Image (tube, rainbow, N blue to C red; front, side):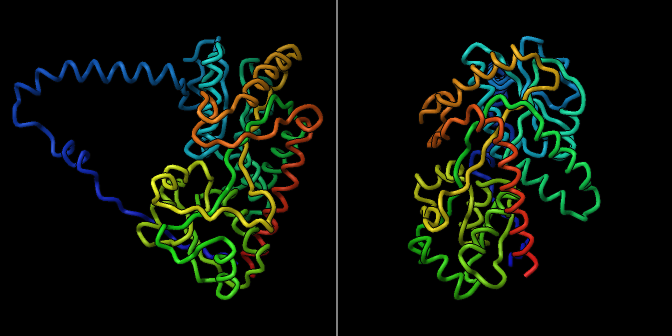
Length: 358
């Protein structure tokens, strides 16, 4: 069983933040002289950032983007997570290869975002980005009795996804487990052995996503752990990592890429993923064509996206720090990818429900 604890991490402001908040430098003439230069610098930064990351706040603002742009739409609930970061990387890479692209947010949760995009016709310069988190949200909503969640709409979203036309799949980072350098846990086998002896021997820190919760539940079940395993949820992997330093958790489960800076700085020690569990789960993003997109446009975009999925060397424009390539998904595998993933994630959701109800 998993049991969630509320969590918060309070951070003291850095010295730089404190000095900025304290305000005006003692030499007011110097401040006035510097003000125009600072203003020009700020304007330049905003312009450069917009060019590098063309971004739409919501669907209603799509008209501000020139028609030459390709718009990648995703659910606004995923904007701050790993899938949102990966979609922005894709947009950056398309821009570098001569195809300007913007990222737009669809209001509401996953089921609302999917149905609003795929129900009806859209212009041919728009794509829908769905992810492992999207499917985990839909699987959770199908079984939910919480107010505001609609199982029937989630079911319709799944049916629309099964019929949607895929353009390409991008691999995210595999999940991994880490502890602080001072932790007495030396490897993942020892961690699981301690949990089998006492389910409450450790407190996990995870991101506030159904994808993370489902995979933690599967890890617990596959390891043969009985009893209540406590965990805390955080808005990002970075916050989950900080929870270990703050003492509110002692094990973090998150994507390898998100933890890599702390691992390299030796603030975290990598335990990895249990070999007996097979390959570690990894997130992904798939781009889907807008309804009614001409076959010629689909083919042209497919070739361009296929080139991006293969060009993910570490340190490249798309690769990012430490990204592990995903084997290309093409042909029949591409056409069946979403259906296969929906079935797999539905299994994960059922495991999570069984673990929660122990």
